[in-house]
Image (cartoon, rainbow, N blue to C red; front, side, top):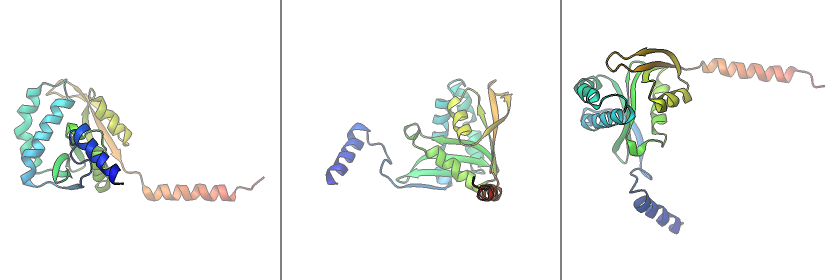
Length: 189
């Protein structure tokens, strides 16, 4: 066991460049005003990286507006070892975005934030650029459907309005019960 632990620590430090949070304490918490600088840097970096088809200046120009809007949004922070690595921003039932630092993408953090929001809402909508295939596929995988497409007048890019709606859990349980009754009441030949 000690040898395995030393091997994992070595692997973490040498091979993965430390990979912050690999063994760390993870949590989702509400946004605090003191988080603003850190989450805004994540917002800017993620948008520039994910949207190479939109000019970098567009995101830089919108930075002050978003910084103000975040103060009034429902924002949840994902921390590893008390370091912010991701966040989700909501305005009522609208997901303004899920933003995960590049080094932490692909680890299920975005999914955890999305599920956290789903637990608190019966339906959610969002807009995503058509060319952002990774995001479109992510949301489809997690039960969102494309409701309509339009052209974003600021960027000239096609974006999708996507929607998720909680299925009626009571109806699902009742339907399963109905199927069970039907199967049990069918005569065995």
